Amino acid sequence: MLLLLLLLLEKLSLLKLDVAAASEEEILHLLEMASKRVQRASELTLSLTVILSTSNEWNDKVFEFAHSISSRVGALDICIEANPNPDPDPNPNPDPNLNYDPNANMGSGLLARLLRHPLSPTQRTLVWPKLHTIHITMQSQGPSDVDLQQLEDVFSAPEKFPAMSSLAIAAPQCNFSALNMPWSVLSTLSLGPFHAYKFVDYTSILKQSTMKLRVLNLRMYGTPDKGPILLTMVPVIHLVHLTHLHLEYTPMTERLSGILLSYLYLPSLQSLTCTAVDGSHRTRTEISRLAKLIQQSGCQESLRYLELNNFDLSLRAGATVELRSVFMETPRLSRLKISGYKLHPGLWSIIPESVQDLTVELWLPAIGDLRPSFHEFLRGRSLSAVPSSTPMKARLDIADDRDVASVREKIDVLKAQFGSLLNVAIG
Image 1 (spheres, rainbow, N blue to C red):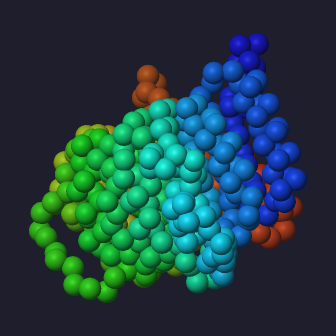
Image 2: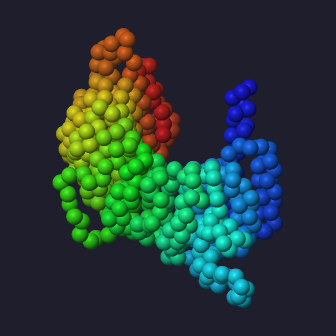
Image 3: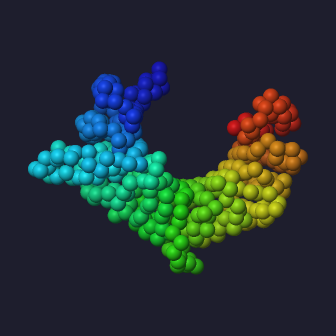
């Protein structure tokens, strides 16, 4: 009963306002329903999701509602859909006594109006006393007119966001540059994807985040700056409190992401996730850099979780040699997740004995080549397990879009062969 009550209260505290394509009547109805939910939620801290469009003339209705509950909002997820050709002058005859901003209906302009109080000319922003998490996503179907530089004005008074500790910014169609924002107060930071960015922007932001940052997610998509990069032989960014690092990169950005790793010193790292996107192929080089990161950071004893996604771990890539160097640096590794189209059968023989939770994600055609070696690996681990130790858990996720019946048939064979040691699922 208590659990059910907690779930109901959590549901009451979640508010989603998707008004990107809504009419005035629809918005008013949505806000009426949201107001009732807020009342039923009593004094609970609220989680608010707002989806806006630069072309909707009724956005102010949403802003007024958001401002009325600003003292109770703990998490704010904002998605702004920028019209490729927004009206640059929505108010052709503005009141001369008001400070009219011609960019008010642009992407960052909407964000500023949401986070400021438009009725108080002496107050630049609202006070959001409980707001600890802000997620900002800006999207455009055409050439973006979003100016991220306006974010500096939005967050220019950090005292208006006294509880802010987590920030995520993504703008796939927008150029990114280092912003003058309160990076030093953050414990969680997510950046990207962006249309274009500079290497120095990332290093500049991370150098300002050394005090409290514990979780870092970098989605390094888009077009990196082709300017010269000053290489260093020693890490220059000491993120001593960072425990979780998640890095995603594409073929265009893999070199840049690898260089960024060489700048980092992460002595408290517990979880490391690396994802290759859109056919990144320099697997051996990237895995080698992971080993160097662990070694230069001295986090061998703290690293417990390692995840490698979409890597080519075949014999041709020579990646098992580099993986061995990673595993030699992780004596306390307990959870390992690997996904890729091809895995070399020799992979199993180098997995550390410390790993107690293993997840492997494969395409079905690769199962046949790996089945004998995987079977031998699981059999060996079961025989060597100490009775008092934690039994090993292995999960095989199979991704396949072909006939499900034939897939099920092969999975039944796998289950019969491996028994309770293996959890097999279709992804």
